[in-house]
Length: 127
Picture 1 (cartoon, rainbow, N blue to C red):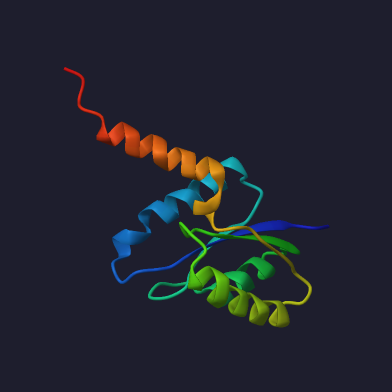
Picture 2: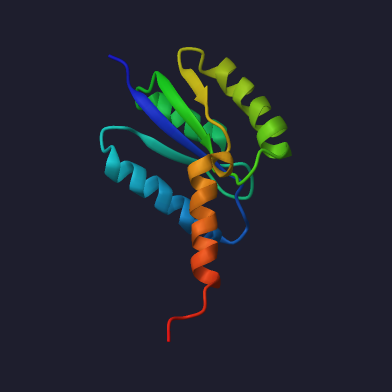
């Protein structure tokens, strides 16, 4: 039986409070799809890293994993670092099929949601 997993990938920071929005995304995905394993990994400063999260999903029986970069744009981390990390993980876990999604911030609906939020925040308070 095939098991699909979701791997969210964020930059990471030294301040643990920085991770709260990303943890909320993971939590909401788990709520929406309780039978789908969801892992959150970080490029640096925080754990687990991509390799650790990938191995955890494989250990849970995931044979296909959607990898979603939680980055606003496809800068060097998404274009260079992530493909190198994913190449290494693919070599370590050849039985798992990896599907790399675009950076979340480049998806039209996310851009529109950010514009809507910015607009709402910049409007004068109703009097």
